[in-house]
Length: 186
Image 1 (cartoon, rainbow, N blue to C red):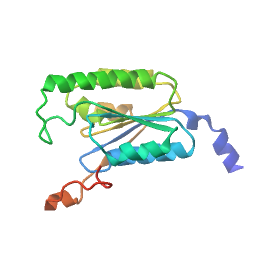
Image 2 (cartoon, helix red, strand yellow):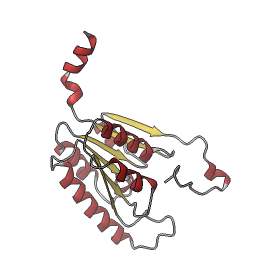
Image 3 (cartoon, one colour):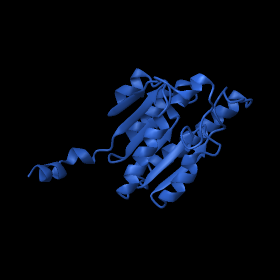
Image 4 (cartoon, rainbow, N blue to C red):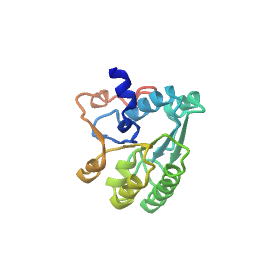
């Protein structure tokens, strides 16, 4: 009887707002794990990455999850790191274009889950406003799960979330001079 009660419970149909934030590794990885799990239930998942424009394992791995998962890279790369020489205005325009695409896709009705990877960093850097992200959250279809990842989530953003996880660094090979490892870090 307990199983029947669980499956009749309509609150489980409510789309969640999920935030993965913090200084530790694993924010994108957690979101990708959620995408993998959703694909297992034949849920349609869109991943839009802010600031990631290079090859990553997830870009190739998502191809194996078709037709359930699609990944779109947006932006011009990370701002002010990894030898970035692109003017800040170009980064901001790319973020705005990526955000506009995200808003269009979120409200399109085509997706069950939308992951906005690294949007929290774009928000904390002032590339988009809290009001814009808040509106996106409030305008999303009721049953859509929306996942936001990135560094420096504000208390106000966390208040809008149904679930939030902070990744806290404890130990990483980077501290010993090791660069990012393919298949592990990207």
